[in-house]
Structures are given as C-alpha cells and as structure tokens.
Image (cartoon, rainbow, N blue to C red; front, side, top):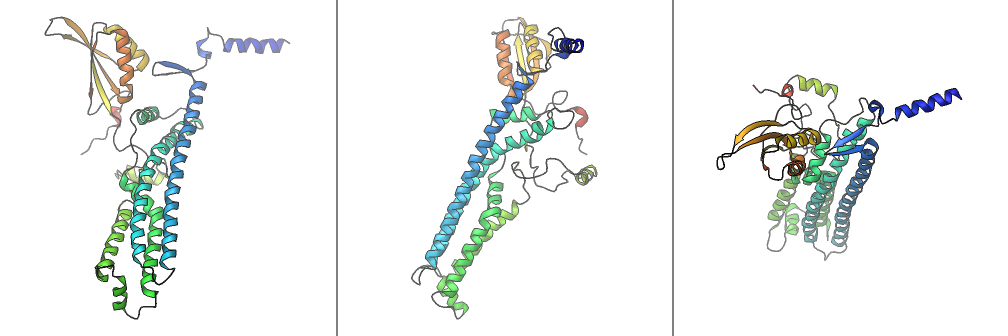
Length: 365
C-alpha cells in the first residue's frame, strides 16, 4: 500500500501545474499553442489527405496511358484487318498518342505537386520521429507552409513530358513504327524492292521519301526530348535518395558542387524561399515588438524616425521574415496599433540567426 501511495504521489507531482519542468510539451506555432499530440494528429490527417489527392492524380495518369494503349491496339487491328485499309491511320494515331502524352505530362505535374508534400512529411517529419534527437529538420515546416500558401509545380513540363515518354510512351511509339513498317512492307503482298516500299509509303500527294523523312524527324524529336531530360530529377515523388552516400559526400568535399551529376536536385526547390523585410512605423513600438517577439519568434530592431510632413517623432521597427509570416505580422501589428504604417518589401538575401547562418555561406572564388 505504501508503495502504491508513493507512485500515486509521484504521478501527481509530474502532472502538477506548479511543476513546469514536468508539464506536457506545448508546440507554440504561429501564435497558437498546441499540444504535441494535437499537432501530430493534425499532421497525420493532413498526410492521409495528401496521399489521397496524389492517388487520384496517379489514377488519372493510368487512365491516359490506357487510352493510348487501346488506341494503339485498335488502330493496328484495323490497319492489318484487310488490304483496303491504309497505313495512314497508323500515322494519324501517332499524333493522337502524342496528345495523350502531353495530357499525361500535365497530369503528372499535378501528381508531383501533392506527392512532393507527402515526401516532405515522410523524410523530414515522420522519419525524424524514429531517430534521435526526434525533431524535424529546421526548415521543413516553412517549406510545407509556403507550398500550401503559394502552390507551384515542383517539376517542369519538359521533365514531366520526357519522364512519361521514357516510362510508357516510347514503347508505344516503337510498336506503332514497327506496325507501320510491317504494314507497308508485307501488305497486301511483300514488297519486292525498296522502290516499291517508297511507293507504298506515299500518302496522297506526299511522296514516300518525304513521309519517311517526316516520320524520322518526328520520332527523333521525341527521342531527343526523352534523352535531354533524363538527368533531370526534380520529381520528389519518385524513388530517389534523400541524402548523399558517403562516396558522394567525399566527392562533394573534394570540390564537386553536384556529386550526383544531375541537372537539378531531386527534392529541394530550385530557388530559395522568399524572404521579406518589414518596416513598421508606430507609436506603440514596445507593444508591437513584444507581440512579434512572443508570437513569431522573430527579432525586431527599433530606430528613431521623424515624419517630415507632421514633424512628429516616430519609432520605426525593422523585422526580417518569410513569405508565410506576412499575414501573422499584419495581424499582430493591427492588434497592437491599428494606426501603424507597415511596409513589406522583398529582400535579396537575409543572413543570420533564423535564416541562413553566416558560417554556412560558401564564398566563391
């Protein structure tokens, strides 16, 4: 009984409001205080929602590919169904398949928009829960919030087009070209010479030599797009390594800026997160500064200013922030001083605590 009472007393001590060291951790985020369990629950629901959206667009990709396959099978069946059918139907189907490829590339960009968020949460939130020190990377929340406030495609149209071409449509086009050659060469009877093949390749007033040349240029152009984009790996939804291997890190330390040899990094945005600089002209400087320091965890610097029209002295607060914090800043300033004057301007680069540390800057020779 004594040991049971002692354990109950210990539990009361741990949960006591007067013992801040034993209180449950609270996530203070954008002016709101959330328990760790509340925040994790919200992230789990958000993660499931983003997976659902990505799956919807993934199914749309499969639908477009199925259309292309069905059209290919139908056209080849018609072309080889009888001697009266013409090979031009195969050429026209190639144009239609290219349209499907363009539609699928566009859908692939939407799929990447949502799958990149899923990948961000997998690598920088959920994976961080499994290894010490059990906290997300410093900028993952900011990157995720910016993607929600200002959505943008994480993959270019060229890469999406080239990737879908290499994965699916290159083989469909190869089948169409093979069927076109077989149709001309073997139907209605096998061609006895190259000249006969050229005569059969003609389409209306276009001679066979011109038709063959146009087909070569058309498919070589598609092939060049597929080859030119093969080293682009901006698509974060694909299976690529999140971090460098030891050999790649050694190559990077040896002076190679891009140890993976890719044209673009697969995961991180191509441009740095938008950074802003705010000037706040206010007569309630301390109240405004206190709110920014407490709710935004951003540093504030005060300087003296003078309104040249009225001749009145004012305080001017300077604050560096990111694009996702603008609305909160305006709300906090409005609550403390509705008469304040706020100027928000883009900053070329912000260095220091809370942004890019000065000791991490690489000085180019």
